[in-house]
Image 1 (tube, rainbow, N blue to C red):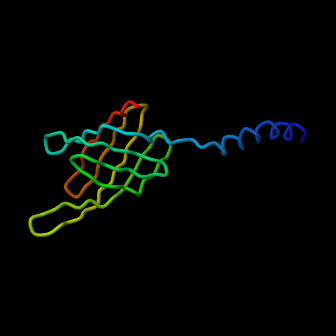
Image 2 (tube, rainbow, N blue to C red; image 1 turned 60 degrees about the horizontal axis):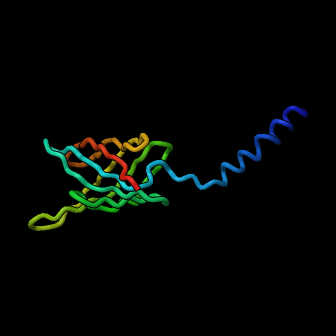
Image 3 (cartoon, rainbow, N blue to C red; image 1 turned 30 degrees about the vertical axis):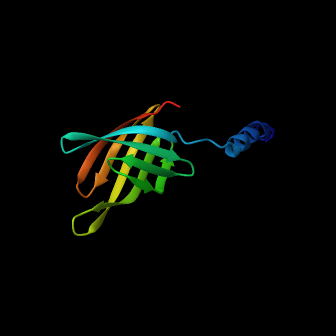
Length: 124
């Protein structure tokens, strides 16, 4: 019983300290993104913030507020509107990917198909 008490008196302060830390998710930052679509590459900039949100500017511009961080995994969903000649249409866009240091890669899922995404973190 005393061993258990001694063990917890060492572990508990460390656990409380780690819980109280504001650990920034690894995906937070600005990313130069390349998306392969229909035989060509489109570029964009993803700005990922905490609390979770992603602003995408470039070939595809949108704000994704349905963002989830899970360790090195990143996923988001958003509605994407594109202007047609007669009317504006909106479709759902989803992304699932991984952050590995200064690289971000994954797949963008759209109604038009799935596209490979590769990105590099911008230097601060």
